[in-house]
Image (cartoon, rainbow, N blue to C red):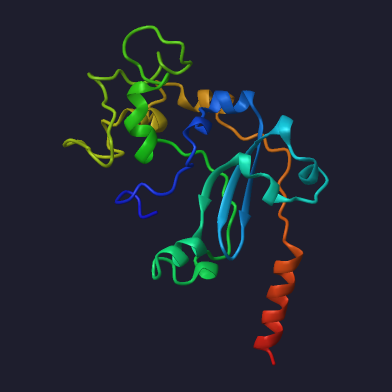
Length: 207
């Protein structure tokens, strides 16, 4: 994604953008379908998990109402020749990384609108009275429009709260209670047709 010069890819349905507490109240299945033609990301409420997926016989072609991001590599090339000349090879072997993303190009600039921001007045946010005081102690820095400030620098509210160098904000304790993953299962499926196609290619390479 070439951060910070480019923001990168994001879900294309904004109403699924939820904070940690909202996500914890509404467990979901996050799934990805990767084919030689496209990549789809699904966000399926756990209470609506398709029977085929629960039975370990996934049929992602029936899940389109849960799509939150869609990358039509082959269609892009067909529509605009040269835009994606090798659709099947644009993605390499994937790694699953579980990470809590703090600050950066999104959270830092919206800190001022979050329940985390300490504005010197009452807020329902659990962290709001503990973090650095906005204005006098910190500012919400937009990495793409820093206005003279340093992205992820010492005056960035989000960065300052997360680092909590002297422990005055209680960040470690807060994250230990509220910032963690609760994952029930992790599975990888492979299409029988794609598997057969790949095996055929390997045989051809060794002939």
